Each structure stands twice: as C-alpha cells, then as structure tokens.
Length: 289
Image 1 (spheres, helix red, strand yellow):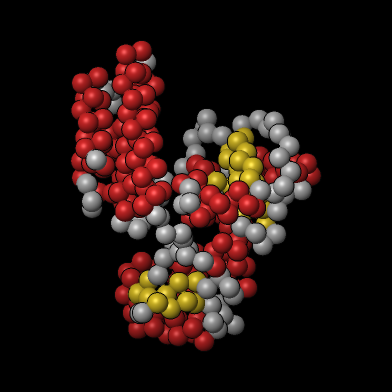
Image 2 (image 1 turned 120 degrees about the horizontal axis):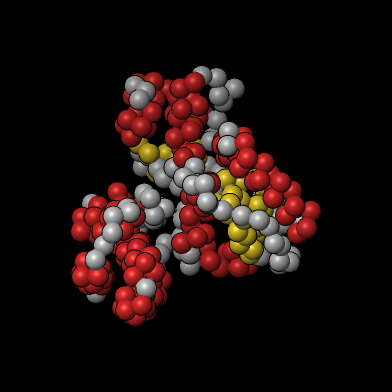
C-alpha cells in the first residue's frame, strides 16, 4: 500500500497544502517534524509508487498519477466535512442547486471559507466551470461562472483569482477539468502581465486621491487594494505566486518591509489620518516606479 503510517500521511499532507511547490528532504523534515532518515525512507517508497515528480533534489506530487488526483479530492473532502455545520449545509445545498440548474463541469469552493478565515458576515464564494451562464440568485453566495476557454485564458495570463483558486480552492465537484491544471506548473508571469498590473495601480492611485476628498473609508479600502496589488507585482517579479491578503504580508516582507508594514496596518482596525494615507500612496507608487 502507498499509505500505511501516520508519518506518510503527514508528508503527503505537506505536499497537498503546497501543491505546486517542490521540497527537499530537509524542508519536508522541518515542516513535518519527522527525522530526515525516516523522510528518506518515505520518499523512496513514494518514488517507487510513481506518485512524485523530482527536480534536482526536490519533490512534489505528480498529478498525472491518479493517486495524487484522488488524494487532492480526499483531503478537500476532509476539509469540507469539518466545516461549521451551518456553513457546510449552505455549501452543499448551494452546490446541489448549481449542479441541478447549470450542469457544470467543476465546482470549487474559494474565498475566505476555503481558507477557514470566514467571518459571520462572510459570503460563500464558488468558482464554477461550465458552459451554462444562467444567473442564479443565491442568498449569501457569490458565483464566478467561466467556461473552459475563459478559465484557460485567465490561467495562462496568471489571473489572481484563478491562481488563488488553484492554490487554495477546495474541489466540491469536478469532471477532471479543474484538477487537470495541477499536472502543470503555475504559469510564468510575463513582463506584459506585470506592466498591465502597474497600469492598473496608476488608475487606483488616481481613484484614491479623488476618494480622499469625499469618502475616507472607501479611500482606505482602495488603498489596501493598491498595496496588495503592489505586493503581488513584487512577488510576480520574483516568480512567486501571491497568496491571500492575509498571508501576503509575510511573503513580501523579505523584499520590502515598508510595504509589509503598510498592508498589516491597513488590514487592522486602527484609524488612519488623511496625511498618513497620502504617504502610503506615495510609498506604494515609489516601489513599482
């Protein structure tokens, strides 16, 4: 059998949580708190079963192997099963309605619920891949509907939402469409994509200046979005896939501590004066110019 011991499950879970990343023996040992000698044995066993891809001295799951696809579905199912009772009922009732009304090819739970960072007022977000674009009105739910072509185009462009769905989404239903994308590495982010994001930041800057005259609360929200976009640009330039707004602070900290501090403060509840927000806009735009 491929899985016989708890230590093997821990190693597989590490690969599952970091689906697109390669890990060395020492990195796996550090993350799982299992001795290197034992990790060598576990990896050798997995290699023999052809469930791993190897790059140099690092490893990741090979999703061309059916076992890895089923493992992803298993761990996702486990996550969905332990959701808060009311949230779980909402997720599965909504998924059943989507299947009945739209006959989709894939349904993926995304957003805060997929990351276990939801609040009481949080909506439940779904990515739906299919040809039927019928509009469904569902209470406390947000649906993003894409056909296969649209999904692939956005994937190849390194769309933030699509990459986030692949990194953190939980598969509820899939006809081997969504999970197929795990067989390839994340797309390389071109200079063209990065330049598009920089131009978008220019527009955000203008919008924030206007909002600061009429609505400081909205201006703060847009400033947070600007700071997050700048962080994503820095990470993309360094060939790192950005994580969520809650995790991106730690990701970008090694490249720009000022920006990490700004994002952390904007995510908090402490009130900011207009002068400080103006300074934060200036810093953000200096970073990408």
